[in-house]
Image (tube, rainbow, N blue to C red; front, side, top):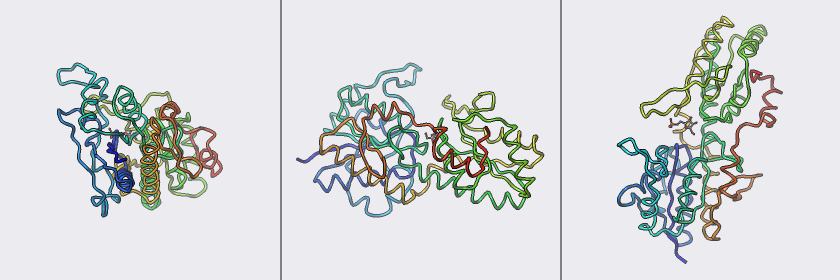
Amino acid sequence: MTKKIGILTSGGDCAGLNAVIRAVVHSAHHKGWETIGILDGTAGLLKEEPDARVLTPHEFDGTVMRMGGTILGTTNKGDPFHFPMPDGTFKDRTDEIIANYEKLGLDAVIGIGGDGSHAILRKLAQAGGVPMVGIPKTIDNDIGETETSVGFDTAVSVATEALDRLQPTAASHDRVMILEVMGRDAGHIALTTGIAGGADVILLPELKYSLEKVAEKIQKVKEQGRNFALVVVSEAVTKPDGEPVWVTHTDGQKRYGGIGNYLGEQISQMTGSEARVTVLGHVQRGAQPTYNDRLVASTFGVKAVQLIEEGKFDRMVAWKNREVVDVAIEDAIAAYQAVDPEDTLVKTARGLGISLGD
Ligand code: F6P
């Protein structure tokens, strides 16, 4: 039976989203179904008429899957259940979204998002919207019940390349180079990048550290005759007393940023080494997706369409043991995935002699 499925990207963008959209459109087309792209995440459903358009397979024949970002647009602001209105009040806008879902006449919707977006989209589906299937994406790789999420591999590749570029300049100037990477509350990017890029110190929000231990490691590197050191720190790492390092943006929201500079000053003072800080920021999100993110994206897209065909809803596609599977969205949201101190990569870092500051 012909179906009409909707697709939207929600939350922060990342590399590989266009490859997911392409996979869904191609797979649905193969079954004779139509795909409707909803623009700007839930913001596209908060207009008087839904902001959406038909997606055709030929749009995806060329460059799109190779591009970072999302051709559909996205938003990481404005919880529709508690939406900030211009007059300063908050409004539950569920009914407007459901009315727009109905106008589109969708049989199902595929939501591509992180844990926050999955929670919102699931609640909307339950409130009377259309049945939903989720696809995990986040550079932070912190969604539970899946070993990887779309965007993580590319973010790590970008960050590793940054370390590759920092190393020769560090060696040329006898410097300690500090690379601050993203990861809102989870240190997966920092840990993976630090190992792949040959860091001497990796600091994660999941492990307490002391400045003395960090300084000790840098002194040791120097004593052993090396004239540079590389430090990777996750943006969510706090000062040793637990104080978070934030930046308050014009929208009033606090976002992590600045721990690298704090560390740079402390390390310089404690070791006498010259330190320089690179804050990688959104560069990690906007890159061309790696082959691996394109593969995961393609696999997830095809599986999501298959779930709709089987009538399996309220499920999120997931990657486990080299296989694409599906899990309950509820379980994925509940099982937030921080770095486990007993994780293989934590043990690998320690085995390599990398200091985790503890
Ligand atoms: O969750 C993804 C992420 O890139 C985090 O790693 C980062 O802290 C945050 O989003 C940045 O958000 P924004 O794009 O709103 O600055």
